[in-house]
Image (cartoon, rainbow, N blue to C red; front, side):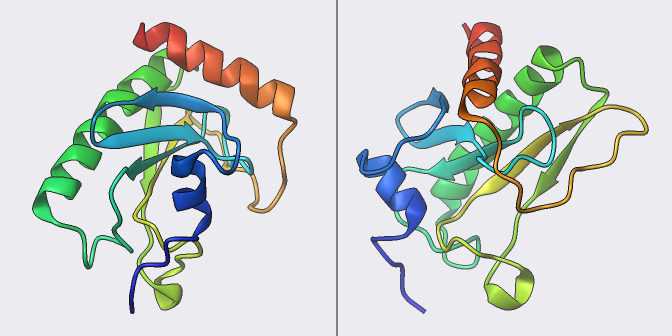
Length: 138
């Protein structure tokens, strides 16, 4: 299957859709999930097209994973987390819904269950969480 230049993450990268941006470097972009399963639930994506890890280049994977690690550490600090859950899905049968390579970074506390999927968060709440993360990264 080919990459769709009009997927939601490509549109966010182009600035066609808003997001709560947390981090950006030359190769990657990170923003808050609008349907968070934990406080500080981030998405980390490459800036260049890749449908998922099955077609991503080694350079894209290396850049994304470096950012995932950096933001996992920042999210743990910003939200007083005890750990972090990473999720990554490939193709529809593997649970992928947006066909642009992305990693979910979910800060977690001991005994905390993830929220069920599909509930939109308040934009002001997300803005505050994004600010907490940016402050740790500064």
